[in-house]
Length: 95
Figure 1 (tube, helix red, strand yellow):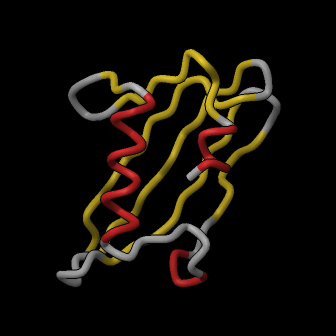
Figure 2 (cartoon, rainbow, N blue to C red):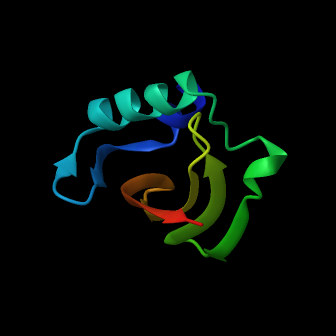
């Protein structure tokens, strides 16, 4: 978790479907995913960099939750001062 925290800008905010979340809220969300067994480092997640430059990083990966539901997750990160400043994660249930 500390590695991720070190990459967050001091003004970091996460955009969810219905609100703008703080670093703390996203940290709790990530802990919940990790508690369910999710890991971006798991080769089964098939992480794919869609776009990367000095201001933007877009990564797509796949995940199956403990119930077997499969998800396509796309993470869009905006960077400022070489740190993640704003972020939005789109989760789509797939068949």
